[in-house]
Length: 181
Image 1 (tube, rainbow, N blue to C red):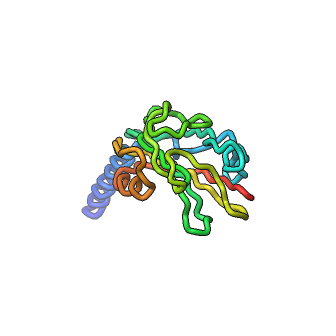
Image 2 (cartoon, one colour; image 1 turned 90 degrees about the vertical axis):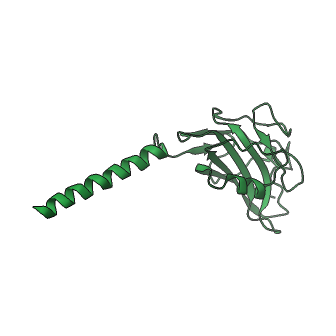
Image 3 (cartoon, rainbow, N blue to C red; image 1 turned 180 degrees about the horizontal axis):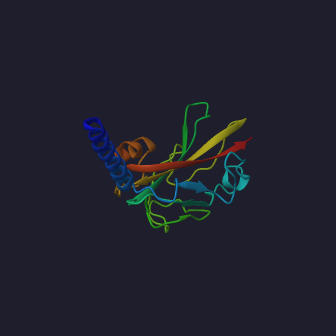
């Protein structure tokens, strides 16, 4: 009888903790998702969004942001570059109420869509599209839901952004596209 009481107490405590963790994490409606109407996950990025075309940012849309999201950040990079991972876009403090970004976000420090753009590895503010020297490369568009607004200066690098986001990432997702020259 005594063992059954201990088991009952232990199970009650265990499930109370689990439910508290799930509530705190804001789990509802599934995982965050990032998509583009320009290309599918793992698909080829159209030339329009590359240095061979208009070199404008693709449209992006996200859903299922976790409760408690105060801002969003995007990093786009190419891990297949011959010099190591090449950063194509650093964008942060995107308003949590945004449902996506339109095509052709202007390469301004503070675009009309809100937020602040950082420095890419082309040493420019904003998006710099795929421009591989040859072969097929993968481009990771990573979306981060943050529990704070970072208030970083324009021109922040990927490394600086990642450091500032430490302990503030609630959830993250990615969309991968490919481009071949």
